[in-house]
Image (tube, rainbow, N blue to C red; front, side):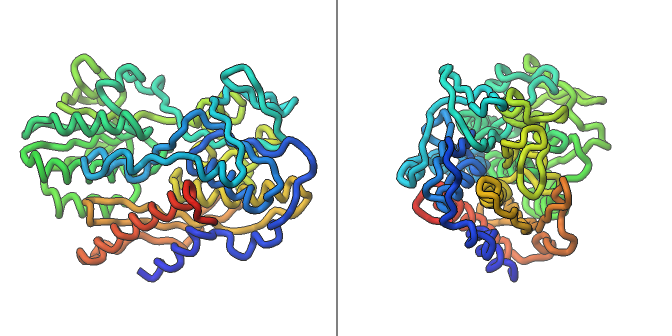
Length: 426
């Protein structure tokens, strides 16, 4: 692939050539920057801020001692990878001088510039960065709830739910039916449900070949659709059946007692049911008045500054980034840009004008990868895709090409996690 070298460079330094003027800048005296949320976006922006302005006080508020990565968790679902390979601690951030607070942020006093914690304590800030990821909007799917997810897992927040779905697949009889409910946009990781479907199909083909996988989708089009559907036909035959909104397949309710998904025209029973519900920005974004009626957070595109509270920045899955998908790759790129823009804000400098890249890798089988890449630029309050600057894997690629893309996916994951949780500098 001609873009391999380009991707490698932009993963490592997506703002190459624009950051030098910020290195060594010192913020004016004050309580510094508080970052809420220790996922990809939060860790990226915290590390980048400290790298660019070593004297700046940076505090990361994250209740968990370890972070469980969602990328590659579909391999755990398919029994191809241990969950431990997805989990990372925050010790590297401590060594960099980033203060860590192991509590949950519950509210923000924007007038007083303080973050209130679950313990009742609060933290002052000069600028606040909120990267809460997603919450699952159980209330938008009748019959589904957090309690029901203990029987019909979503596995869309990696951890115990990932293992629950894996174990249900292991217990499935040969000849059983697995059904997935896939939501309408927007949601975290647009190609994620279809990668999961692929790897579940691979597991079934390998271990329980008389079984069936039924995909009930609230959309008629999805990310990398031609690549996925061609691969399913070639690799799994009739094992996978996809139905979209035009087929009446959008799931409108769940009957957990009958292990049934309800669509406008049908009731579908299955032995294993994976419900991916609608989503919204994480809870703190709602309580801090950073989200609008859509459930997501409006931002100034070029800076990631909140349009509702100008001393706050929102990035990652919670932000309305328009054409830019909610992905780990995008969150990492956004974190680097947001750090640069925030420091310019603190020091009275000029915001930079740059483009961002996103690449989404997906595994159809362990050694069969596909991808789509896009380049995005800020256009007023919106991120828009630069026409002709991205592209997807070729549809007619041979197996050697698919194997290389699978290797690229693993390489991207290793580099990203080293960069976030290890000693690799950005």
